[in-house]
Amino acid sequence: MTRKPFDTEKSTVPHASASESSLISDIGSTASKLLSTISQGRKNRKKTDGELATPLVEQALDAASEVENFLTEQSARIAYLENLTLTDELTGLFNRRGFNEQVRRTLASASRYGDDGVLVICDLDNFKEINDTYGHLVGDIVLRHVAKAIEAQVRETDLVSRLGGDEFAVLMVQTNWRDGLKRAQMLNRVINRTIVTYDGHEITVSGSLGVEPFGPADEETNLIARADMAMYVNKRKKASIALNTAAE
Image (cartoon, rainbow, N blue to C red; front, side):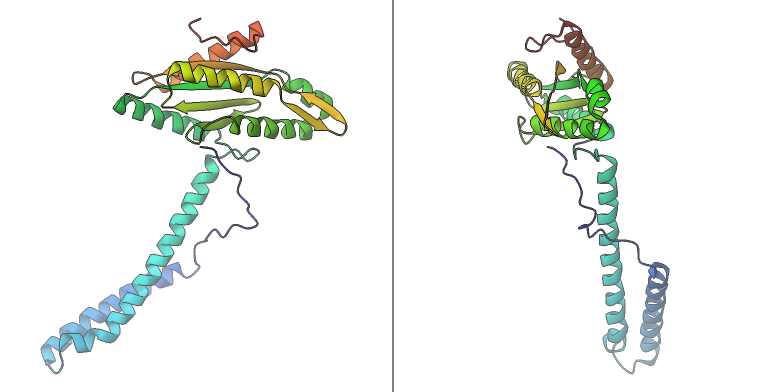
């Protein structure tokens, strides 16, 4: 699962109404009138409670409908804002906060159901050089290209994140080690064959990956640390195809 960039210009995100306090006050007033009228009607017994109450019941229902619409709009707004806090603005992927949340949920599910999975962390080797040579604008273009290259290789259920800078992560859920490693090796080849063309220049991307399996007994901090360590081992060795785990 990947995140898609938000189009703020086309967004119809609702905002809080300026008449919120007035609306709540009207509801209280209507309810008070309703109870008073019903009570008086019982005393007078000139009409049935239903006959007396009907106009105010309709007012109360209208007010309740307004409240329901207001709360629905606010729920949508809250969900939108929460989505923004979990999304990397540049690539539309999960950001680090979103990644950490997904890791926690995935490990909780693994603990409950006995699932296995694989975590892949990727760090670009030559990103500083690209930034220094071509500028940060081109660096951003490279990051978006890498993000798309990764997205094109993963399953719909895999969770892709940009952790910050030039570091990416893929959380492969319900995946055994053999299949996860095979797909990580394919990711490694794709990333290291990514070429970005800009202003007549061909910019070759180089990256190092760390791959770690996880299961029901794993814990978030330890898993991420192991994958990070494996990535740095491979970065030092510059072994683009033969990936190591931290234990190796």
